[in-house]
Image (cartoon, rainbow, N blue to C red; front, side):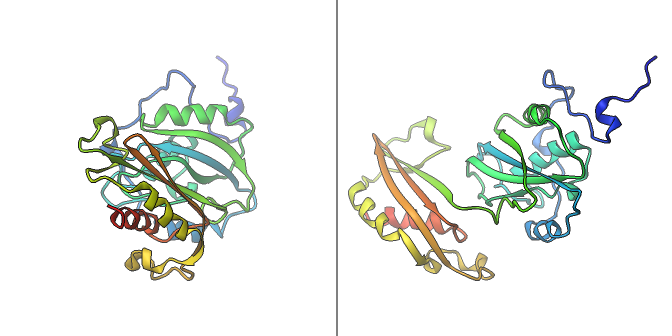
Length: 266
């Protein structure tokens, strides 16, 4: 019998799962035990990284319909919790050692096409193809890792952000299309799209957005001044899409900007 260790175990790197078929299915949401490590605790721990630590960048897409947002919750399933669970099974590391951090804390029911995140390991991977396939093999079908790559030590998913883009969709018709029910707000009242475009341009530029934030969650924000690069309003039949790009946003700032634009022009 050949007892020689595999190349992965010989170097101390956990072997990744085979690309197909995956040896064990993704756990149902109810079986995940989410950590209570907060985002702030993770950020503080990131400052204590050892020189031998390796950092990895993820780009994640997810349908947020059945999740309570990205970040940890004590008793409800979140995207961060489930991605981290898959990572623990692949890397054989504890949650507290992975320090998974996302670029933004999306709310319950919010979807993402390009949520950037990072995690760390004490070992290097020569190839990420197997890790990528294993992650998507373990994750439920409404979460997918689109990209995985190595990152420089200075990279931070939250603090290295240059801009963020949010899309809000409004289905403007008397009857809601059932195929849009999880992805668009329904407004039965005819919207004045031209007036909404005119209102949107006033948000562009660098402004103090304190009035558009939920103050109870922004008390610790040192600077409420944010730079909005563009705010576009596009009409595609009954679907009205608002796209906002900025350097950063206060808690629920974009949501309040969008709904103020709607309410002012019904």
